[in-house]
Length: 310
Image (cartoon, rainbow, N blue to C red; front, side, top):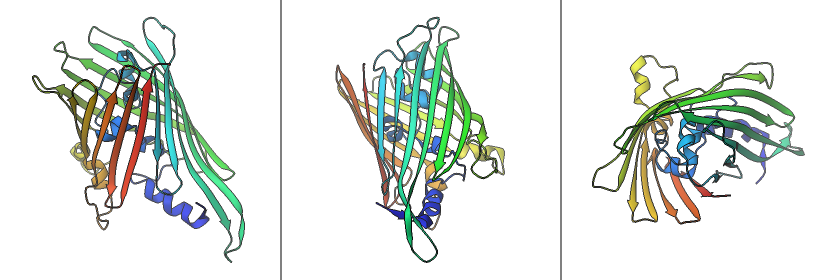
């Protein structure tokens, strides 16, 4: 679908509901399992998708060394990701590479008289590498590096950023706690000479697998690095998720993020905004995950992720 230059500004405002940063796509990106759990995933282990939110999770991944995610946005905007654990041993640690992308489709050049004069496109891309290892028996750490590229028409901007995280697994093997600090970096080149900040994201969380019940409960405080009038207002950004194991092959997931709900304009029909749900299907050869997130009464985003061994 073709859109006019006017709609470029309008849509970029809509999708950046937290700030106007050029690189805000880093904050909004998610995969199927994490979107179904509303982003409360920094404590999840043995899942390559969790590395996006906490690089320390990489060291616990034992299977499914490649993950591919696809998201169909509104209009003709598409995004996705691919992650792969390299088959190398770095002092018993693990190394992965990743790529996140968003393509905003085709736009029309239209002058003030409504005369069509060609098309242009807009894209975002982040290419990264992550290393993770063990600090102590139950404590894992991870560090990631990203090169970020964003372009609109003939203009482009670049940046670099670091991710870091810790994951502590209690000896009961049912409880984890974690902290991660994402997108700590700087802009290298700008669109128009105005330097923009990278959207930092500090997260703290825990999860717990209930005894005698097939439920993994997750809770995370997200976007704690945002500026607020009062310090403790930061802790209102809560994400909660529950994953129910239905037999050996199926996981059912539900979640809620009041960060997403509160970020929307009060004049919008919020409906069930902030809520999410999904399902995971597990076989010996491939994992198939689906997640749906509700952003407003009329905007649902659907994500699909495949995980398998290469």
